[in-house]
Length: 155
Image (cartoon, rainbow, N blue to C red; front, side, top):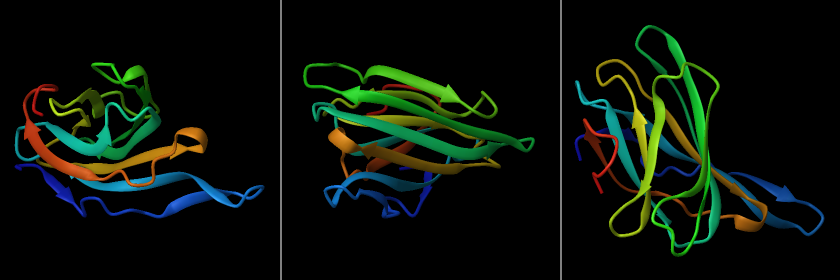
């Protein structure tokens, strides 16, 4: 694992409660600080979320790039049994359009992989995962991570 991922899998416990039935139905978990190494710009983060889990998930990256540019983007998609990639993805950028989440795919053993682009020498950011209400998953964590010069095919 050549990437820098500090505090891997630290759960933020930033959960909200639906008070009408007193059941936790959502969560937002910080998966850690992500930074590539050297000139290799892409970090592949293999999560514990399976591709066949039938969940609706949002991954969000908040960081910066070289030149003091803000990167803030997220991707929302479904994981469904029988799909070969995340279903119906929506990637949205609120800051600089270069960097942050640049790809997402299932590993060869059916786990969600998020690809984040950073400047390997200078920058990084935090990766969060959020789910809620009917498709919630409170236990998503990081299984593995690796830097690469490619945006796909590491896991």
